[in-house]
Amino acid sequence: MPAPAPQTSNATLEAGQFADEASAKARCPTDTVVWVNLPSKIYHFAGTKSYGSTKRGAYMCEKEAIAAEDRASKTEKHP
Image (cartoon, rainbow, N blue to C red; front, side):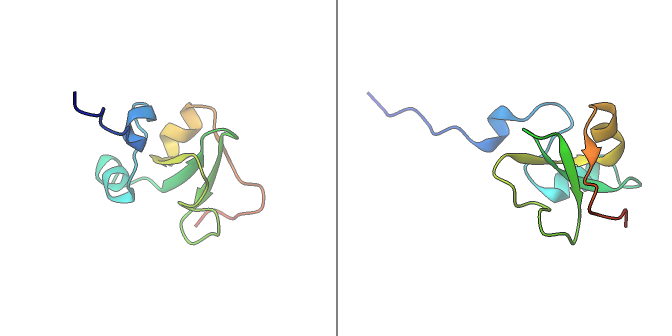
């Protein structure tokens, strides 16, 4: 009996959430792509320490993140 395939991070992502920045940019070429820390619902901008580096997160279009009731980090400025 073959071993089950390991789950990828994509398995837990919802619509509008992406595992890679390029996919998010392709979905919203005119919007800012942000990294959303999924447990805290706080998003980070490119070039900041937490962008793409929290344990559980996803790249999203900023407008979609706002619609999902995520908020920007209070310590970061919009690019």
